[in-house]
Amino acid sequence: QVQLVESGGGLVQPGGSLRLSCAASRRILSPYVMGWYRQAPGTQRELVAAVTSGGSTNYADSVKGRFTISRDNAKNMVYLQMNSLKPEDTAVYYCNIKQTWSGMDAWGQGTLVTVSS
Image 1 (tube, rainbow, N blue to C red):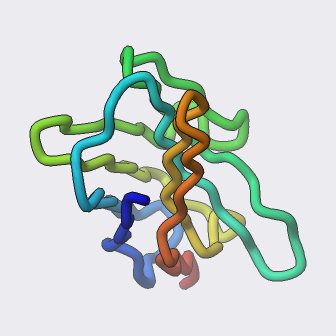
Image 2 (image 1 turned 180 degrees about the vertical axis):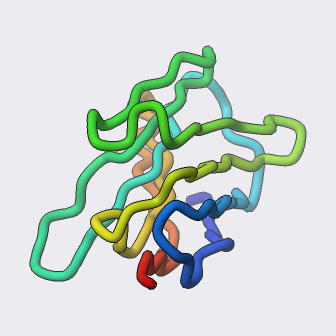
């Protein structure tokens, strides 16, 4: 099983930006989907953005135009650039890798993002 470690969370004012990073402990064989999820207190975990091994991306409607997911295969990294942050973006953000052909479904420990003035 691969280990995932997120970083980059913190406190930011509304309208600000943060970049989250997720480091995988080893190379992930294709095909796979890497995603960022978030969970605010009292809510269910939701998909924020995902990128496939082929490079296709998809985003939650609430973050389209503000967040960008990207990956660096050489470094086994996935990133989430978050711009124009809003208080409702406050949540713990989790990195995930799904590899349906192997049954892998790995999660990181999460990183807290707080958007507040």
